[in-house]
Image 1 (cartoon, one colour):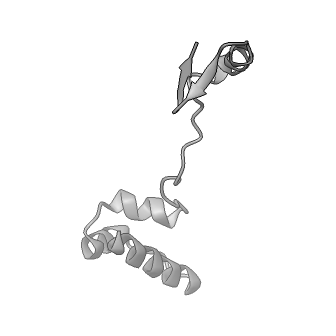
Image 2: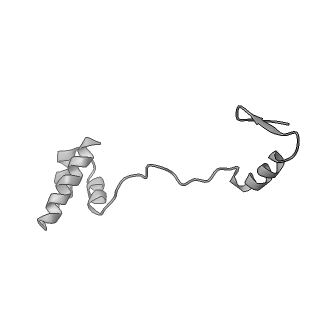
Image 3: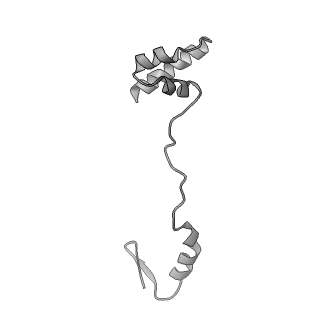
Length: 82
C-alpha cells in the first residue's frame, strides 16, 4: 500500500510538471505492473470502502414487518419468537 501511495505522489509530480510518465520505469521502481501504473495515472482511486449491495431479505422487508406486528410475535436477543 505504501508503494502505491508513493506511485500516486510521483505521478502527481509528473503531471504538474507536464511530463509524460514512463510506465515501465515507474513499474520497476515501485515493484508493480506497468498496467497498474497506467491505471493510477488515469485516475483510479482504489476499491470503494463499502459495498452497495442489497440484502437478500430486502424484498421481503414489508412482509416481515407485517408479521412482526401480529399478536404473539416478539423479538428476543435478535431471534423471532412466535
